[in-house]
Each structure stands twice: as structure tokens, then as C-alpha cells.
Image (cartoon, rainbow, N blue to C red; front, side, top):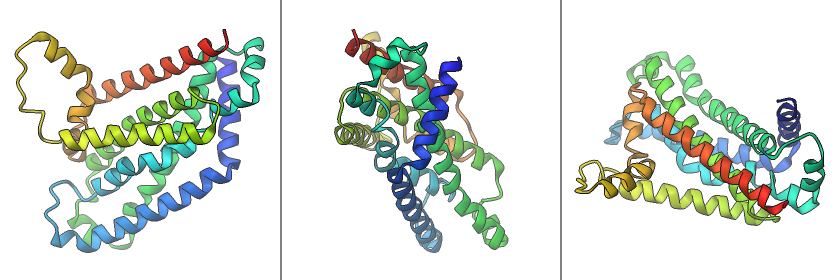
Length: 259
């Protein structure tokens, strides 16, 4: 446990002194802010079926492929490039603590960016309380649902980034792998949006396959419930399992490399 906190403190320190994370965070927050202002100004002319607060959640969700690679690409790839994994192997630090510590630091930074993005509707509520109330920004359950949704998926996305970083020694390759994987996952979710809930499976094998990839079939459908404050524990537990799965793959990959 001590080794975990040592890794966590070190990784948080590296993230907060890295120019790449600040530059990517600045542009990401700027784009989310511009998008939120445009959405609020044009909301009355749209047929938006979700709560207005979910515009921030969708911005974070679809923008994750542009943010997560900058947070995770150097985590394990840099260790492999510098040859420090062998040194860590001889120290009282196991690879599980190493992977989980690095993932926790990335996820905490992702959480920080998420909370900063939600400052936009909070400031809007403070400056324009009447308009904010009309848009439903005073509904605490909507805030909670949107935060739970994006953080549960953010945990999985950062775990995918850590796994990508464990596959290579090159940071840029790790970043591109993460970007590609997240983009493909989101594309599949969009493609399957509103199409899989009515599908009937006639065999147990088809049903098992469907359940295994349920987050791809119902990923975006879940946001409708979460944005209304209907927090589905099943969805959160599913994302936790996926997060643990990719972290386990990362540990196995690091152990394989250092045999």
C-alpha cells in the first residue's frame, strides 16, 4: 500500500508539471466553454431531448479521445523507454501498485478537468439564476447523474489509455493507440445508439455476447437516464469491471515484458 501512494504522489507531480497536460487541458476547457455558450444561446431553437446540463457531459464524452491520450501516453511507455521497469522490479514495488497508482493519478486529473468543465453551468447559475432555473440547472439529481456518468466512463477511458501505454515504448504511439481505441469505441456507441435495445436474441450464446459488449450497445442510451438523475448502479458496476479488466491487462503486459 505504501508503494501505491509513492507512485501516486510521483505521478500526480509529473502530471501537474508537464506542459503537455496544461496545454491540452487549456484548449479542451476552452472548446468546452465555447461549445457550452453556443449551446445555451441556441437551445431555444433546438429539439434537444436531454437536460441542458448534459451538453457538458456529452462534450467531455466525445472530447475524451483528445484529452485522455495526453494524460496516459507517457505513464508506462516512458518507464519502458528509460528501462526503469527493471529497477522498479528490484524495488519493494509490485507492478500492480505501479499500474493502479499511475491510473489513479490520470483519473484524478481527468476528474479535475471534469469538475472545471462543470464550473461553466455553475457560473451561469450564479450570474443568471432565473434563466438557469428555467433550463433545469437547479436540479441536484441532474448534476449528480451527469457527474456519475462521465466519471464512470472516464475511469474506463483512462484505463484503456494506461493499457495502450503498456504496449509500446513510444509516447506518441501510445497516444495514437489510445486516441484510435477511444474513437472506435465512441463511434460504435453512436452507431448502435437506439438500435440495440429492441433486438431480440434467440440463443444463450448471442445473449452472452450481447451482455459482454453491453456498454457498446447501450453506452449513449444510459445518458438519458443519468441526465434525469436516474443513476443505474448496473451501468456503473459494468464500467468498474471494464476498468479493472484493462488495468489487469496492463499488469499482465508489464509482467510479460519483464520476464
